[in-house]
Image (tube, rainbow, N blue to C red):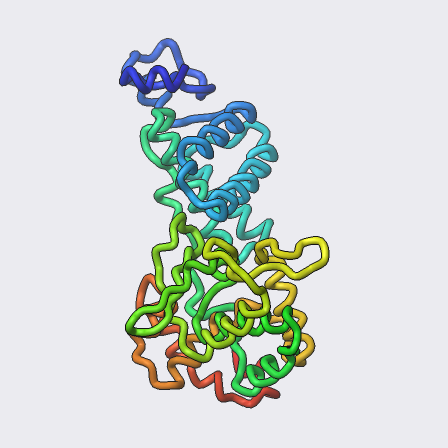
Length: 341
């Protein structure tokens, strides 16, 4: 019914709202009714379903997952309010306080959860249930000026690469993946999504077309330097005949032979190599390899604008975080954890 009204240019009917005082003038009653919106749990669930279907239909699977996980948290909190929550600035502030004080989430997580609620409120504005977005005035926490994940030292990189048994097919695959992260700055999801046909040779060298996090198409090109390309060639040679549409990296397990490698598998394999190399720490994760790539390039004298381009950073400010930390690459391994505060 609401969809039909929107097509006719009418506003959809509003769900439950604060009771109106019939003794007041009609214009004043309408302004008060428009200022506060209250949904029942059933109405909220329906609107969340509509939001996912209408607003997120062209988003990537990962983006949809992030939004729905964030909004599921909002729905859980909404239930705890027992009908006392209203879509007002004060209501959104109360939710932010819950995320920070009760859940004790990180600054980045609080910002992510509030972004999802902000977009949902905008959706309610777009379909006529709200006159303005109450979440716009509730800002997320500032993102930290340094990365929570540490980077590897030169000695740790050498230990990690030395831990790989490159005589086996799985070892050759893992070596290629680690080289792409360390020397091309690629993320796990970009590696997982890559197909053989995404490798392109140009006059300037080899490139890999990638689909980053939150993107729906492979619209970015990552330079693949000769040492990395050599590792990829060695691995692909072990697979015999391959087709352009095949995944660049596949599983070689008994039950999953030939299936596209997933992020969980990549994470697990890299963690095993980090453990074997004796460089695993709480702040060292597989994604630390991607962060380390920027420091490697900066220490090799690469221009900071080129590093920004290779890391696919949105702003130079993000790249400057690495620029300020580039000395960490050459620090003593024993002092690695202490020197990153």
